[in-house]
Image 1 (cartoon, rainbow, N blue to C red):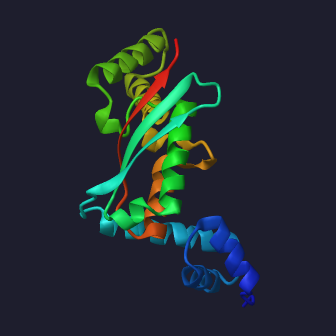
Image 2 (cartoon, rainbow, N blue to C red):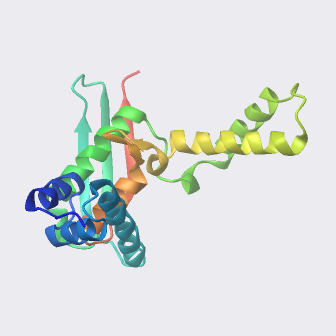
Length: 197
C-alpha cells in the first residue's frame, strides 16, 4: 500500500476543495492513487447532494457579471440554506464563475424542464427533415433524432453544458461537488443574459 503524505492530501484538497480528512480517507481508500481518490470524492459529493435535495434553500445571492468588452452582462440568483454560506467567499466565487460561464456559453435556461416545448419540437422537426432522404430504418432514425435532441439540451441548458473552467465536467457536476464541499443545498434559481446587438 502506498504511503499517503501530507503533500498528497494537500494537493487533493486544492484540486477538489474537499476537507483535509475527506481527502486523506479517499487517498487511503484509493491506495495513494490521486485519480481514484478524486473519483471517490465526486461519488461521495453526489451522495451528499442527494441527501440535501429535499432541504429548503431560502437564502442566497444575486450577483452580476459584466464582460470586459462591456457588451455582455449576466444577472443570476443562486440559493443556499443559510446567510452564513451566502457570505462565504467560496460560494461567492462559484456564483461568479457560473456568471462567467453563462456570459461565455449563452444557455437559454437552467434545466431541460425549462426549455420551451415549441423549441424542442422545432429541433425534432429539423432533425427528422435532415434524415428524410436517408435509407436507414425508422427505429434507427428515431434514435438518431433523440440523440440530436440530447445534444440540443446539452447546448442550451446551463446544468448540462460542459463547465467553462473545467470542460471535463458539466455545470451540474461542479454544482454537486460544491454542495458536498460547502455542506448545504445550493440551487441555481434563474439568470438573465444581456448582450448588445
